[in-house]
Length: 175
Image (cartoon, rainbow, N blue to C red; front, side):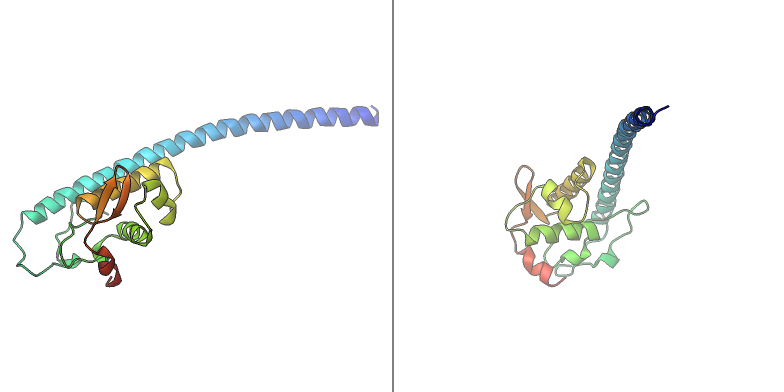
């Protein structure tokens, strides 16, 4: 076999190997996307379960003995929620500071407090150190809605979140 024939044979073999690897890469990309979808659904499910358990815990706390006017129980005085790893977001009330919030919720409130105006979930996600995937954005949107429900944030327009209008910035300074 001559040198040009040998080079042509090697080139054909290399081209075939590249085509095989490209086909494998396409298959792996499809499998990766399916795995990401499963992960995203599981994250959203876990967050929903956490939210429901926290709401049940808050309902039990609300049904408990009343706290005298002017006294705000600290996070150590709230009853333990059902389940493991449940993050409780207490309803905002006068004198309560962001330090009582779980870390992720506190980060969200701080990002919004530092923003010049209302933000969308997709703008908040990278600012709190998460990858901007659908699952992370939806999970953060759920947290934003929970913070609105509990009085920490306002949803000025659909999907646009800002600080509740009562001077939360002062609360941040004392946290």
